[in-house]
Image (cartoon, rainbow, N blue to C red):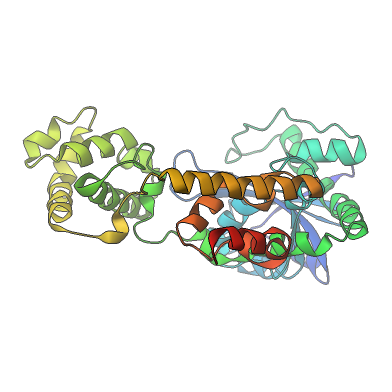
Length: 361
């Protein structure tokens, strides 16, 4: 592996100069979010040709010039969704183009969630170091070994992109990878719509009626509090406590205080707010807050038929069935959703139209 260059982005000019004129770069990020709601960007690694850079943003007061420079080229990443989430939080922007090597590998028959180290080993017979996967990237100074590990995360991205592009082009699937990678630039992926925070609450899926409406509102309240305070959701209100409040529906602060494992500070500072949420849930009748209905026998049979069609087509293509259409998309199609990935682009032509026939249009 080539030597890497470390740069403190308090003085970003050297990195900006290196990025000027680059058409495509490999990018990875290191971040921490154990103690915060927003991920803390701790390091940005990028490769330009054979040059490897580790850019440190922690001491920089203003990263605008760096973001202008690094967002100008197209990016190559591996499993880039979390990286893009952090980039949007930090810069409010995304690059114009992207190629995701994990996405590309899946379209050639590799495991859908194949790790970067396994891909590099598969393509180039190179073993990558894994000893710093749990490093504290917010600690300074970073050790030489940590920086070498971080730089290695981008060292093989551009070669992998080149090799995967060749293989995809040879089998007529390069356009598939380009389409799927481009979907990562959809900003709605990184936004949480009102009423959807409950999807992050373990155990909330099967709640019905008033308890469901309460859980939805409590989860939205928790999300706002976590975002405002930049604290993890579970620090605001643990999932189990949120569910107990929604199910038991306490009507007084004293009753709220008897909820198992609820923090006294929550009762003291937010008890009135939580009780108001519960009263609102009692009086509301929100159709879009209704929990998913368990499928009946006919829907279960239809799901099996859709899965069989997808599995057969995936086998012909030599890729995993979930790459074509995961179960959740097929279930959503049965529920009437037609704004699905399997029903557009290259998937629609290969299997989506057949699924629509089974669905009755």
